Amino acid sequence: MGTILAVLATSAATLGTVPLARRAAETFSHLTMPGLNALIAALLGVYLAKSVATWLANRTAARLALLTCADLRAALYEHLQAQGMDFFEHRQAGDLASRLVADVNALRDALVVASGELAPSVLIVAVAVGYLFVLNWRLAALSILGMPLVGFAIGRFSDRLRAWSNAAQGHVGDMLAYLTERLGQVGLVKSFGREAHESERFAAFNRDHLAASLHGAEIQALQTPVVGALQIAAIGLVLWLGGWEILHHRLAVADLLAFAAAVGVCIDPILVLSNATGKIQAASGALDRLETLFAAEPTVREPDRPVWPAAARGDVRCEAMTFAYPGQAPVLRDMDLYLEAGSVVALVGPSGGGKSTVAKLLQRFYDPKEGRITFDGVDLRDLPLGWLRAQIGYVSQDSSVFAGTVTENIRYGRLDASDEEVETAARAAHAHAFIAAWPEGYRTRVGERGATLSGGQRQRLAIARALLRDPKLLILDEATSALDVESEGLVQEAMERLMKGRTTLVIAHRLATVRRADRIITLQDGRVVESGNHQELLAVGGVYAQWVERQSGSR
Image 1 (cartoon, rainbow, N blue to C red):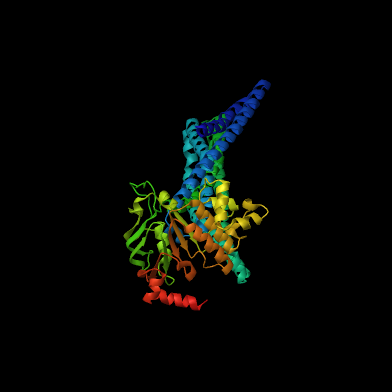
Image 2: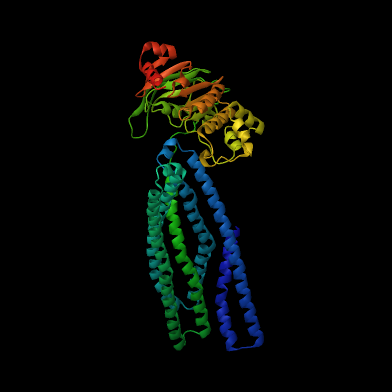
């Protein structure tokens, strides 16, 4: 409501200059000091009112645009969080960040223009044109003949600006995607001495973005003078025609001045309309990109009628499960797997056999193409996603650590945990000793992706995070494969504490990690080929026995 009132006030104050032109002509034709003082006072009053109204309009428009875009950005981020893993596996993080920031900012700029400048400009032009017809319909009709030409010029510029905006925003997304990836892997770049190579690649992205930006700047720079020249030509035509009318005694001088003032009042609004088309077209390109994100439907959905278990035991079954990634051959074929509550089950087998895919399916990052997975007898697709994932703790080979403090990273397992509970989890994970040795202790910031931590330290923080979560189902995905012998021993001991009393799925390439499992499953080409404990599978002399022999020989 405030924006509407401010727009009306701005329009009224601007249009108030038109009758002032008539009054000025009448005042100077019969000049008196009181009349001059009144004219100047009215002029100052109108322009003061216009300044205040313009300030209010711009302020309310900016506030409206900022609030709207903040809500839009939040809604888009929430929509992205709801997408399945397949959505993110086919998109670059930098491009998504560009859409959340740069594209939404383009919409913000357009909203500011539309509500703070465009609306009053349209109103002013409409009222002023109506006033022209009241003053002299013949002159008004002739004056507006040039408007289609101005509209055509603005339309042509709009088409070019929209095409430019789509190209420019695409280049921004590509550049941000490249920067996000390369800066996140700066260690790999340096270890291979590829700094010069990466600088050349970035220079190419930068050149593409510069070329698109320069093209857009040229279009925008040309738009204003072209539209302005057309408007000046229109004013010249009005003055010439008005003079003709005066010479033939069909128009008074005061009316011509009022008429010229009304035409003059239209100049700035029409220029605003012209400039606004640039921002609006840029926003249209941004909106197209945002719409493609909002149009994406999550492949993993919350159930329509969720089943809320009273308590969780951690009994998991995979029944006749088949799964294939989009456009690829099946990774898992008709697989049966049973994880009894409280048991430790290990998955072994060659790379590409489907072990990590099982971990993703158990967390319901994907749904099986055929068959089903149950948790305590309930199909995962019938369980609330939040509830299901709250029952699962996941520790991988490359445990993720966020930029932030040690406490923040451990507390990510359970956000309402106290400092004492965080420390207890860290002690159980053999992490307290190295944390306490740092000057800032648990307030130590670990850098992006845990850059200041060793591999063993990251793993122990991840285990502390999982301990704090207190899951019913624990998934350890190659959790020690990248560690040295000393770190592996500490992490292995921490994991054994973590595994107590929980259903545990261990995915590993190292013999020491799996030999003590209650049951070992051997996967090959997406199928279960063997199942039993360590001694039973050795006696069979099959795939597992060969794997153990290779592991033993490599030590």
